[in-house]
Figure 1: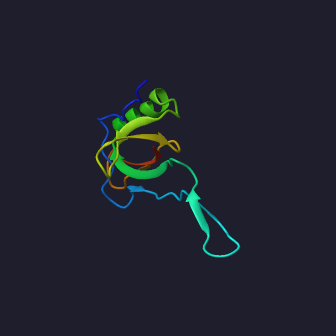
Figure 2: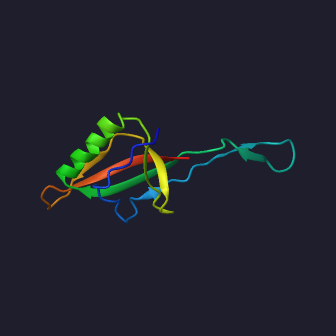
Figure 3: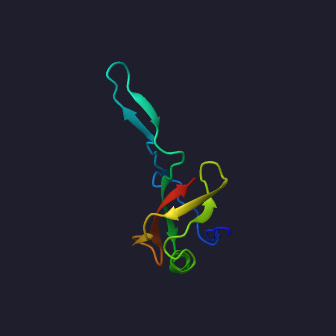
Length: 119
C-alpha cells in the first residue's frame, strides 16, 4: 500500500536556517589494547531528523491538523519532497505540529514540523 502524500495545498518550508536535516552518528567505536580504535556501522539504515517552519493561515493549519490526525492517525509515514535532492522521500512526524502567532499579522501562523526522513 502506498504512503499518503503531504497535501500540495500547504506551503513549502521557509528558506531559512530553521529548515535543516540533522546529521546522525551511525558508527560505534571499540577500544583496542594497542593501536587505533575499531569503527563500524551501527545500523544499515538511519532515519534522518528534519525540522522546518512555514507560514500558514488558519485554513492551512486545519488542513495540516486533519492530515496528521485523520490521514496519518498520528503515526503513519507519508511521502513528501527531499529538499536537498528534490526527489520523493518518506517522512514520519516525531511530534505533533506546533504553531505560534506571527506578530503584526492577521490570521498568520508560524508552524514548526519535527520530522524524520525514513530510509
